[in-house]
Length: 388
Length: 190
Image (cartoon, rainbow over all chains, first blue to last red; front, side):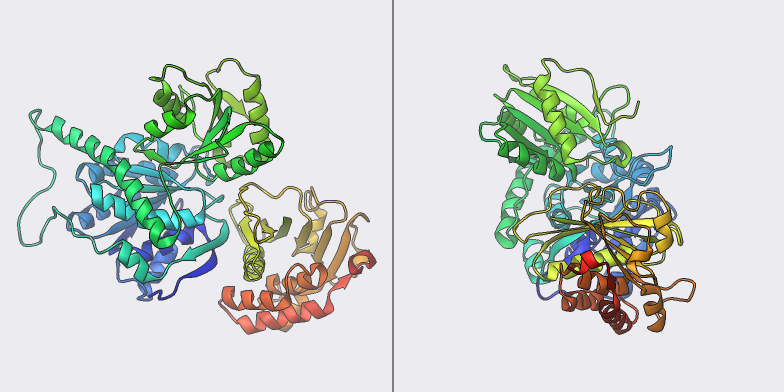
């Protein structure tokens, strides 16, 4: 057991593993082969060495991994899995099952580009393609935030009875080692006590979950799921404040910086936000009125916050490391949709860049601000860094 | 901020070297970040890893490749014959090569400072790896300390003990020997 807090240089993958260890997860199920990452490798070592009192269930596919998590969570166990790209896609059917059955499972998804052609590099389309499965989605920027978001994920999930997907960029976070504070178990226990499931299957008491819901009742189940998502906004903020009191770090729905008097705003999510921050700081030093908004929580979507933050600005550039084929960048369409009811909307331009792990540099962000400044209207997509 | 790129071949320990170096700098209070060059690693194939070291109060926000390093470390001298090893290295930058030859014998442009250390021989002497596949990553870091003075030897030795699971003391001795025997070109020694 970790009795004293310590800061160590570890990867984003291992930060997730430590978050799971500290959350006292009882059941881990995972498919252990590519596109899997070191997240579950370290967890399997924790379990094998007795450091972690959990069952580790290896399975033949990610679909089965999520099925095993659903079974474990149905009897009230605190449950975790991790995956990436095609593995997440294979889970798709079971993702609906987890949320519909109101099971507070937490999963880490390492963003990897979808095949074909085969790729292991970062691209958010895998997780964003699971947008409508009823999972909360948290896009983290640092390895510390990855560890913290696992603990927070269980806290919020168990409060609103919805599953959480903690999402981190392949390599840029997953394989990058940086200092991460690994907390003492006592403080984490204080924040996250054992889970007591309000509804659960009990061995010996024959019951079933997920019976047939005829048109007389199904609709209301969906409304309740939506209400749970709405409650999650408040829960994320409240638990974020409690977490900050104990651990000194606050995480909300969105993170805004350099926004005072900002006329142009960069909106992005995930690891790219750090690169964008470095670029925006440089532009601020040059006297440019540029701000940065990082969307941390994608579901439930922070439309109220985005209206407050972006209302009254002149121009907004949304940077998407993802693509909805046949439409455009996914954060772009969500941001536009959030701002639509406003009478005075900023010009919102969508940039698609960095697909499949293509390097995105501070110079790219600065050039995008220059590009945005020149634009008077928004094309469907601005491709950035495409070889022609 | 100092940016470092380490080139090696799969199995030589380039990624672990980058981790040990970052850990050592972190022990001295620096901001650090390290990551492999996003490839699929196979034994013998060229691999690279990056390290960024910054002042304690300078947060490392950027998450992109190191393209203009201050220092390049080469774990296998045959890589110097392939393209891209010195690409982007800043003028006056340092090249540290695992080689039995003196720095001036290597075909490296004179605008760079060159240092060499026979890390393969040192690794074998301390029974790290095999004759065909010596594990040179800890030895080269001892040489790195002597040539750059970016971190203290004690910090690197502590980081080796923390990050090397097999025979950490043998690795420590290899780093100490490389520290003592690295050769620098005249410019680098200045």
